Length: 118
Image 1 (spheres, rainbow, N blue to C red):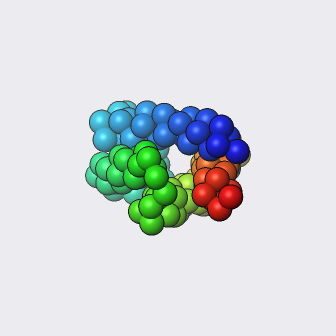
Image 2 (tube, rainbow, N blue to C red; image 1 turned 90 degrees about the vertical axis):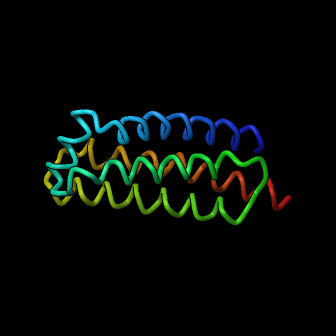
């Protein structure tokens, strides 16, 4: 279970790091998507900063209460993204991608809990 936790968490953190950087840099595809969804142009800066904070918290070596907040924050982010894409009429892939990220996050979370509650 420890291996499952490490692999899922490292994979998740790497994916979030890439998206956090693209959010903070507000590259053109990110900005177009945000504007298409009806959000303000500064939102990627806030989301990218939140992702970086979450990455830092999930990278902590031991379990802390702060990790719970990071898992919760990412969960809100992914469900909000999926709902935003669905309401905007985007294709199924754009709705399912954040939910797939949530599944990876849940694998990390559940395997962490199993590891600390042995």
